[in-house]
Image (cartoon, rainbow, N blue to C red; front, side):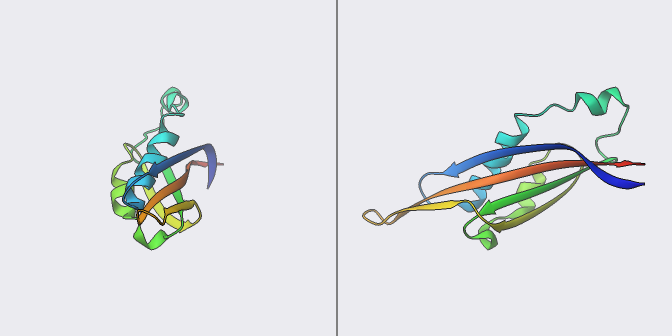
Length: 114
């Protein structure tokens, strides 16, 4: 059997003041999760803790500043992997020396299917 993607949800999040990439990433993931329901998995009797594989991709301008473990820990179910990649957007306010961070999240759910 191979893992096939059965759900893909997208989200956006930001930290408007302070340039916190992890905060923006967490908000993007929560935005994606709030667009989804796992009713199909429950109907099929799939154990979401052990049989659901969740792949999270976070796009931000400085991926090395995302605490991927904190993002992983924020997911309520599944075997979760997180990677941060170059993407998103930084909006710099040069007058105030402030950075607004915008993150994009893709949350994919895969199941072992024939």
